[in-house]
Image (cartoon, rainbow, N blue to C red; front, side):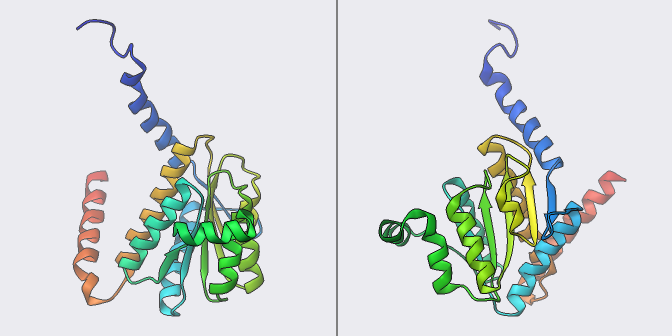
Length: 222
């Protein structure tokens, strides 16, 4: 074979990215509403508890984000809706551009939340930098309404978004690619966890399949 092994950057970019992603996921940090560190497992349980409770009290889970985070918001709103949790995202282009054109992009989400959110709702605010003004304004609006907030951010540990949530997940990396995949993974894990906790008959098969996979993993680890 011509050339040295892994002489082309393409040869090592995938394993390197996987390695960096695994490190980022293994080092996700969580804080509470007082900005105090909390165990990741406890934070994740609180997240799932709020999602399940929103379903029981007929509240909504509202996802917001920009760019790639908006794509995550739309995806997760769809997945949570499919398991019986009333979820939505503000990702309709005509709606967002109309509001932004008339009132400015910084207030696009806060204005929509002012119209649609209630004190029962949960806002999931996603921002890789944790500094997007329209996401911070969305959190301010939900605080004014009296709703609950969960945040997912990255980059600087002192980013202002982490000050808003009852639970705040932080991915310690500077790259959008790693942060966004980690945020997506946390949300997908929450879908799986909420699905397994659902007691309705139509979810019995999926819940049992999830339990079977979990049991198999435990056996392999032993």
